[in-house]
Length: 235
Image 1 (cartoon, rainbow, N blue to C red):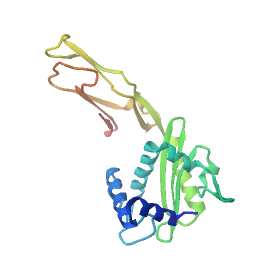
Image 2 (image 1 turned 135 degrees about the horizontal axis):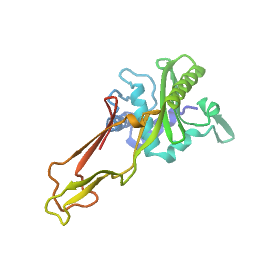
Image 3 (image 1 turned 90 degrees about the horizontal axis):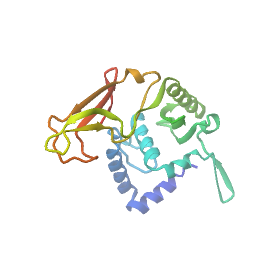
Image 4 (image 1 turned 90 degrees about the vertical axis):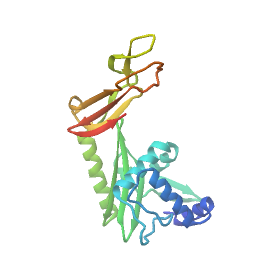
């Protein structure tokens, strides 16, 4: 079951009341950049002013997958059994596509049949959000179309690895050495159109004056990566 009563019980336990818990939900939504979301309850039940968008739900799903992998693993379970009652996961895609591992179905008369889905293949993950369909089968079908499109035309590529040298011989003042190398501090992975690796545009900007003392964590420049004028990374 969807367990609306369970969400209310949890909300009251955590925050004292469902209204107070909705305030906490809104605070977290703001931190995640869900700028077009406003919660009024813990269940998702329709209410005047209770709203969200497909983009915001994708941000929420991404945070769940990234920050709470131990909880996210529960969404791939096809069945849950308790007290001799066996219930099936309502996400049909779990049976149709082995790469799908979540996330959540939903249905109200106001929102229609909805599905936030996610799948991972060969290191590339996509999240799809479908809302307002007219049936359980339709939301699964439309979600599958979106995920298939993503995997067909895009890939996640390792653009740079930790320690890659972006520029040699950067001038340093007041140091024991006159120059240092500008290196990448961490792996950079981006999801890009297939075959677009050689078309990425890199812009490296180094501070006008670099002074000692320096260590491996000192930031002396910035890297921006773009594709066809659209910025994909800056750090």
